[in-house]
Length: 191
Image (cartoon, rainbow, N blue to C red; front, side, top):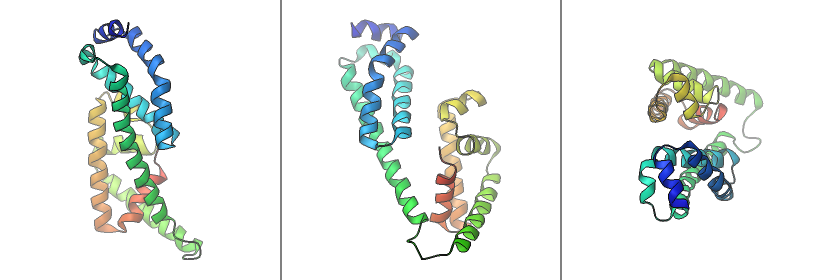
């Protein structure tokens, strides 16, 4: 039965994709949620797995065990998600010093200074990178949504975002507190 659905899916049959989506979504989501303990990351993982299945649909008929294939793909993406979560938690710990080590006035002044530095850095990015970065961070759009709005591929969005983050990190390292600025960049408007 599954082989027939894979054949139909490889031919672009959206109802076959819907069947696989309905069948595997609960497993992918619960596995990702259990491993990451993060609803947004689990949802991103589900989306990534399903997009990969659709994009690679022509290779699916050659898979003997779709459940195992999806399990492995999900596990790999979960590991990447866990690394991202650990990185974010480290930044949060660094951003929020122990109580009593700085005054609220000092923190507010530092926050304003870091926001201004980030604003300057974003404005130095090439136009397309600025658009992608702002749509992701300020508007909270996912890569797929940005791709649709800008009429570019999801991979192009990902490349623009990676290039923007590299440029921002480099600028912030040269002009300010690397960890504090990066934390503002990643956390203040992270979606």
